[in-house]
Length: 116
Image (cartoon, rainbow, N blue to C red; front, side, top):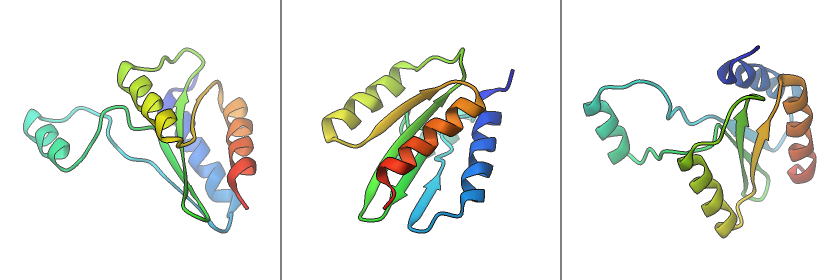
């Protein structure tokens, strides 16, 4: 069974291979073990708990959030809150759960919906 970060790496490799014009994607690295001092600095710099795994940017300023979960993964309280605020702001936000092949198809659906 692949871990979430392994699936995400494969998804990034897949997205790079597509070479889509007018499309940018990135990850905000807000996970991991850090010292309390460094966590404090990052928080002051704007790091927010619950930030989705991937951010897609499309022509016209469209931003789409993607949260990746393994089949056994669960959404944290801070991730649920982020999704709720995204819904209020009308920012597309997808929580995709499954294995790599399923997630690849779901990511393709998101791209098809927003890429022009």
